[in-house]
Picture 1: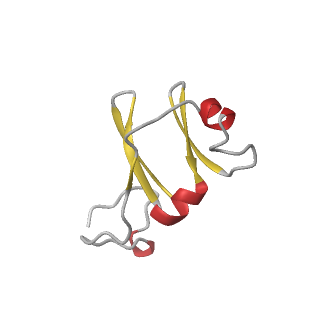
Picture 2 (picture 1 turned 60 degrees about the vertical axis):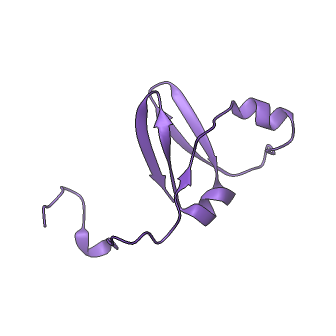
Length: 82
């Protein structure tokens, strides 16, 4: 197995079968809009992703179910696990 510096294969659970259904992010909107209309509260826990000058907030509640989210940001693919 190819070794990746800092990666410990013995600690990873590697399988061809997904353990969780990834959360495909197909629509994004400003967090301010979701706060303004009450869909997200000021005390809502979020997981933040930053790429360049763009930030993406994922709801921790949703990530607790899916564990994996993926999409595109600035034309580049991204993936987050939780």
